[in-house]
Length: 363
Image (cartoon, rainbow, N blue to C red; front, side, top):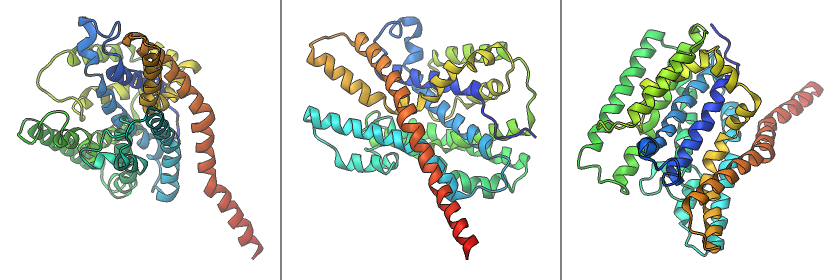
């Protein structure tokens, strides 16, 4: 069995690509070259990268904890909180300040739901305040569920049973999704039905656990070799698939049959693509991808407001300036906010524990 304390740097850069594609989906579909007929169908669906994030998250959690006999919930959830909440809170503060400065009304229920990361549980509030935050509410649900699933299921069931049950849950989830979408329950966007189908945390659990299953197979041992061409073929197939409208909903895990092999192949690759993606600059871009994702709305709000004040009506220019500023802000927050605060939060109990040990030794 492979050791699971590894850092798969070649996967880190894929986070950056996914985060940028989501930013393009939100703000750049009318900018060159994303508005061209040859690619606009692709980027009009590039929000499926959120699904990639969910599956990758499930994969990485198994890589991090797969060789442990049991997950200690207290220390585990502290580390998860330290990882996501500081910059998440920063984004909320920036949106709040923007609304105050712009003299706009504030949805205090939405603000409260966002602060407690529960907005996705309440249809009508999922996209409130800082819009991308809905996926972090879903991610928090994954984090809270993972120790129970890991301790009581993955560690007690055989690989065969785990595989069958995870795949069965995945298939049932997709059936429920499509039945709801093509029934009178779905009233289009915006509606509470839309929020439930696309943002409700339970509707995304299949993505996380299919990522878990991929992680389990990875640590059981997948041969490392040069998979460059196979990765490229899968990427091309993914692009062609997204450009086709076949009536299948890709956003809640259906692309797992593409994303899972892609993640496994990238993680096991020893080819040129891995050597390139493991360079320090690309790894760093991957590391700041969370900031890029969660800070995209406040950055775009401020930049677009400046352009509006200057009476410059150029959406493409707003998009590209916002993109540059967003990357800089994400890098700054990663270095001076995200990383330092994560270390301080993670060390809180460590320091307390060492003090308690010293006291115990004196008694």
